[in-house]
Length: 295
Length: 92
Image 1 (tube, one colour):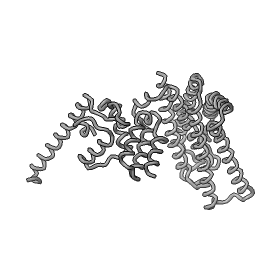
Image 2: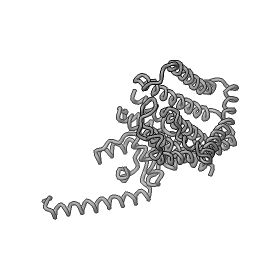
Image 3: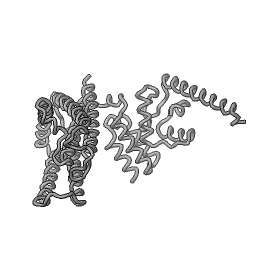
């Protein structure tokens, strides 16, 4: 059981370049020495380290197309988590946005809307050619790809149904202090949203690797991804400025508990900022790796 | 790991056993191949042709040099530490 689990970790969780270079050897090692639970944990830790900080030479094991696919799918994952962090803050603070005050300022509010609009357009423009290629392939060749293309709409549909059910259950009730059940429902809804995003990203990544896509389409997606990365960096910087200015905002005490989870606005904003900074950093790394593949 | 390879080429399992014998530390497979990949990327070791999926590794010239430098440094520190302990009368 442990051996099978260990092999599954090697073949599913380690980066493709690592698997191509060391996968067979690692398999042989797992045959020589039966892996125990500690070895399985060590493999999990190793896979995480390789994902975050792989040695430079490993990417040379991959074809250019694979490296571009890796870059594009990593950018998609970063964008989804980035948006989840912003939306999580918005919902957790009952409709406050980390740009709330920015909107009141004509120039800053306008700049924020331009950055958001540009990023959303870049996501659509970058994803559209890939989605069209995948749908075309799925129509021609049934099987795993066709099933995988159905996964994101099913996940989003299930999440939408869950949202509607919770909204219906909440409708008509007087606004009061959040109950334990209410907090639990909100936390479960948030986790379901994250799971939905993760399922969409994993399915999109699997499909992207399984379907032949013209190099120019991948290049266009990478170029759009670069715009999205720039937007993520700009938005993160703006949120950081807002976090610094929050204590000075008399209308919104940073320490006052708010929202369904009764978390202080300052703590919620700090969480949002940490996730955003992590996503923006990973996006910058992925963008650099993607472009380096072409060098 | 470099010390283990100093006596000649070894594959992953042999390195694990040797390191356990030398240092009393059992390397997990993830740690072993994480270190191997970094040492290879730094040019300190190189892989030889695989034998039945088991690829032996050996030190490169740069690896020999780096290992010698490290061991000399450790030796200097150990010698200084022992001398200070003796001077303080903590060692006979």
